Image (cartoon, rainbow, N blue to C red; front, side, top):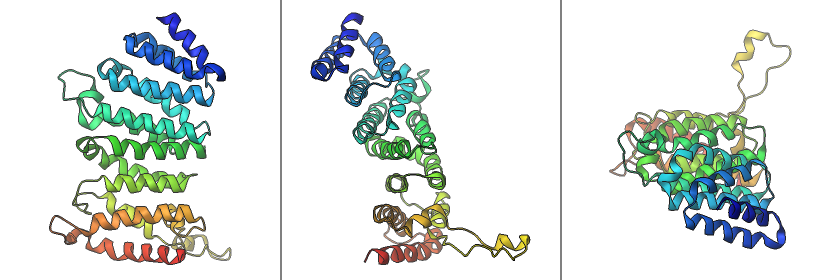
Length: 304
């Protein structure tokens, strides 16, 4: 079977035989020789193959996780790390394929019931998505716009496919990390969409009391720019001046798509803060709503 896998990977490299190579690799997966197949697929990704070969390899890894989750679970960290590494290679198709694959893995992980003595991220809900979110949030800080964009797209895919219970226990640590990542974002449009998706999937009511991050996000959205200090001012006066937060800068950006994504995040938070189970703003959120609405209206006014 190892010979068949190796020959299939060779075919995957050549344009004229790529389709056949992919079919043969899937046949190997159906034959059940998972251990050697996973090893070969991961090795193939480490050598950074062409776009088509990379996309097919990533897709087959996701299929393996879906069809044989228990067998793949011990290799989950290696599989996710290998897929995340492909996100930053600069090809849009590659980024989308990797994001979709990680979403499929999130869905597969969410199917695991608690298992006594099982692998931590497979049996503990709070850790199941950590195997995905941890490398993706790290990738959001990479000095590579393609990597940041792909990571943000993948976070959205994971949030969309993961079970509600897994998202709920992960969101408390994910939201502040997403907010913080905006400060280093080279792909603000994608980063804002990831933040909006995380807000959408947050449990309700989304209040400043139950989710302290809400206040930090509002501050990030509403902190407007102020003039830089004059060179004639003394140093101790410079603390009076603050720059706009990264999210506020995006809301005021001339980039229409980035501004729309930031407005999407602001609108998601406004909706989350504005209603509790009775349809009324929770008291703890009331002070946050007015400045958030004003910032959103100002942004929408720029698009008219």
